[in-house]
Length: 533
Image (cartoon, helix red, strand yellow):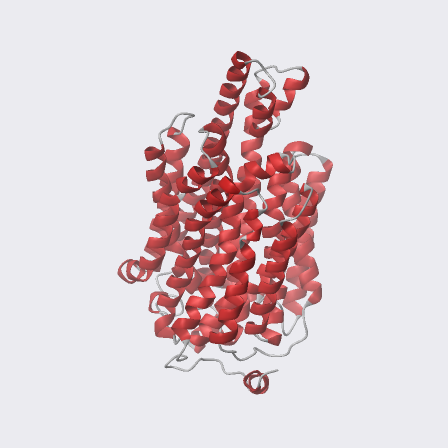
């Protein structure tokens, strides 16, 4: 244990140096590189989904779990990882998480079955769970309050950079290599980030030595697991099937036990009373909605570009550029926008932009829609997302004392990833169920009936038919998938629109008398945020 961390265990320092750490901006760039590596992996994977389906003979459900295994484990273990980071040091947690993430990526690259890949994606999610809270905890400690808004904007923009270069990188890799290259690319990125952390990022004070809240961790993992399993498998089992209802009931029961347990503890994993803070709850909800739309939309758009439009993986990756450029640009500009509009108006406008872009996409997209039309809609959605992420994250972290920065970082990340998990699950299952309903009207029989399962299967069946029959089948399948995708986009738009209305009505202009946009939460204000309502 370093001497800095030893001193802080005895006398925690609630506020960082008012002038900030002298290496804070260089350290921020290194920390952002870790975020780029994590977001790059997910965006590369979206581009690789069709190649994975072919290379591993993966079904639509397999593809969903290849994506969801990472995000589910990530979201479920974030709180425990944040607690361990606070106990042993955020820098150590960051290095350990990156090592686990990189090792999981290397082994995932040599998987021979979908089941193996799902398992190693879960390991990657475990490593990433230590990375995300640690980066935010370090940023909060390195930067003085007056600079945190800018630091958070840079941190949020780096997520846009990962989304920006991920599809293009994935497309370029898949043009020359197999799907495994989508995982090998993580290894050198992780090694470079670890070297940068070791040389530039300083150690920060530990945040206490309370006993780990293992029962709460177990309850959260099981609860989130049964919830997402119920959502993903419901189209196959039926929404009213006994197993589905049992899993949803188990989630409610486990959630109630989790809350009761945490309320009784002096040092809980999560300060449950924090949820009495309206500003915190609504800021967290906006992040969840944002990532619900982001993950759900990207999950189906990649398949739409590659299968319906027939784009190569590289061209499909370039198709996401308008979305990612707008997201990264608006993330960088968000401090200026928030200063001029205020946090409530910024979040409201951002959610409204997401809803508008998805609505236009859902109402106008067809099998032959030109890319230029889609580019404007995706840019509008990306701009809305980029506008919101930094101020929403500032609102969340400003709701707790600085000594709870690891918990704030974990909560910030868990709402993002839980929104993403639900986005993939809900939008994916909506698209799947609508596709099957549309294809059922084709009355396919025999081996051709497999085409009713998913779009990839339809193209596989078409490869064994005469050109005329294949053309009819793929045309029907393309139309069914596009219609299903539009329904998913409209569902995500409705969620974003409801969020915009709720934020406009319910979010206070100021939290505890301190403008969040100033990036200057006070200890007295923060302390009140975790007291009983």
